[in-house]
Length: 277
Image (tube, rainbow, N blue to C red):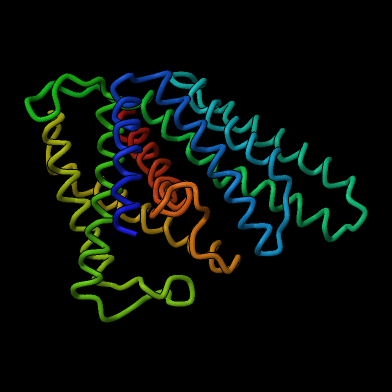
């Protein structure tokens, strides 16, 4: 298992670093591909849980939401409501073709949910566009604001996940939400939040911003990461599945790797929209 994890990381990490260095539109394209794969896994889980939706259409709609998030960068964000509305209406129209009204309603609800859920990844390219400028530094070099804040997002979420796992294994006694994820502990929760705050402060300081900003940013990212992880755990538990897929040996599926970002990215984008007005 460990060997497969290392081998998968050896392949994935260089790809992610290369995409990051190339910048947009490569970042946008990468997130679109991730959304398509995560969408397919989401609809497979929903089907296993008894909520069979239109998998191809829903996955394509999720990818379209990511594309819209990138296309609307720097523009008014009100049109963001247009595509989800049209997508939900079309899914409802397709559901009318099913003979069983119960199956039709389930397909409509599952398709709308799956597309909107995975489509939250669209806030990642939107985040790159709306982020305020950052300063050059010896720590992180010369970066545009978008990629600088993308580092904050990735570093904050990964640090939360890593520290939550480490603190939970070392000090975890009292558990919470065991009906969703039996391994979650309060020690892991608070340890993860502390790690997210510390790393966010370090990265923000390297970007020329006040390290104190790492407190609200780290807490928000940590809470978002934990919520995203729990929601996917609920979905997998309903589907009686351990992983969302088998695409990444030793790591499970794509959705398993991005579940924390589904909530953390919109939260950070909302934070930036408020503090940069």
